[in-house]
Image (cartoon, rainbow, N blue to C red; front, side, top):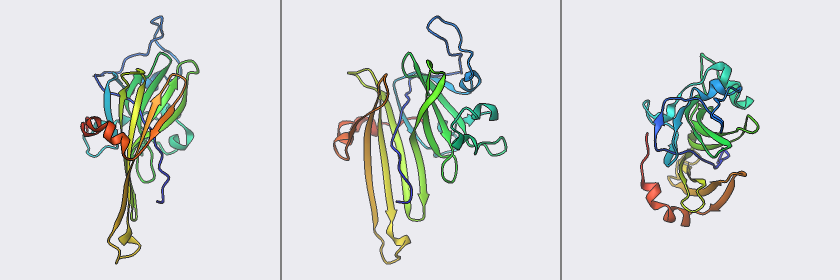
Length: 223
């Protein structure tokens, strides 16, 4: 394959609301440098959400354009592609991951267009975006193609947010050899736990994970 495939994911659905101010434990509204950026994301409660690259013009994962000033808070390799004339950063949802961390779900630049859905983790203690990961993507180049989506949910045992990531990747061999009409395709699954102290890749498996989470995989989320 001509592109490196990055696994990751997180966020969830229960209620969707208008943007509201972030408050500290004492109830004081947050007034830090990310205030204007946070205001551009819709609030999301935590339950279960299927995350994927938008496949229609009305998809909730198209998001809304992030202003040019707030865009500078994102990693430089993404912010440099974003302008008011050609926007490539879009706000989707925000939600509290735990008492100290918040997740920002955004559509970001990719190889050809802003088709990558990423989760950015904001740490209240550091007042900084500390990491990010890709949750959804649709990509193709010559005979290679990839579709990535994630299911984000709260584990009933640990009460941690977890992400089941599905990557479908393939190659059309006829592009290099017209006589070869076969395709090489496979599904890859990863389970990630968003523990309070970081991220933990629990399990990577092609068969056991989809079998265990078959009900979740069959469930269709908002498009």
